[in-house]
Image 1 (cartoon, rainbow, N blue to C red):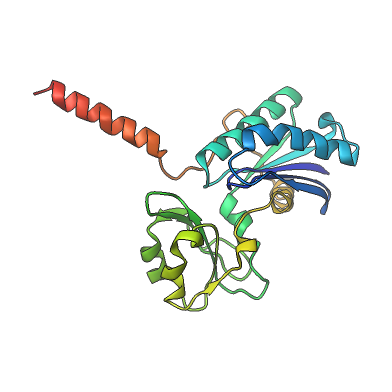
Image 2: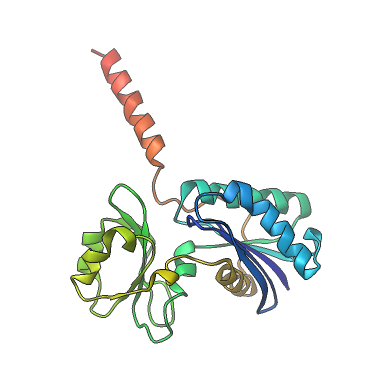
Length: 232
C-alpha cells in the first residue's frame, strides 16, 4: 500500500511516503510556522523522488492534533482537497499518539507534554505498549505532574517552558530531539489503523483541538461585553 503521511501539528512540520511498512522518504519543513508555504512543494518533491504520481497514492494518513491551530488547519485542508479530488482513503492519526512513539522501547509510562499556550499543555498517558490510558486532555502542567507515576518518560515542546515542573518530581525528561512528532510515524500508525478497519470521512474531517482558539475566546468575550453594555 502506497501511503502519503502529513504531520503539521508541530511548529516544524513534515511529510513522508511509505510502501507497506517501509518508509521510503521523509522531509521536514524549515523551522517555524511555514506549513502553508512548504507543505505542497515538499509533498510534490517527495512523490517525484520515489516516482509516484499523486493519483497512485492509496492512503493518506494525517496527524490531526492536538497541536498548532494554524498548522493543523493547513494539513487537514490539504488532505480534504486531495481526497475530494481523487477519492483517496483517509485515516486520521492523533498527534500525541505519534509523539508517544518517540519514547524508548523500555519506557513503561509515556506522557507527551505539548505546549497549548495559556499556561497549559496537551497531554495523554500511554503504557509500555503505547496504548492510550485515558483521553487526550488540556491541563496545567503542575496538575499533570501531580498525577503521573514515578519514572514516567516525559517528552514534547511543552518542556521548553515547564521542564522544571517535571524535573522536580524526578520524571525522565526526553532529549529535545524527541520533542516533535514525525510524518514517518504518522505513516506507520495510519497504515495500522487502516488495516484494522478505520476509515475517516474526508468531508467531515476536522482537527482535534480540545478547546477553542484563543482568538475566538477573546472575540466571544468582547461580544459578551458589548452585549452586557447594551443591556444596561
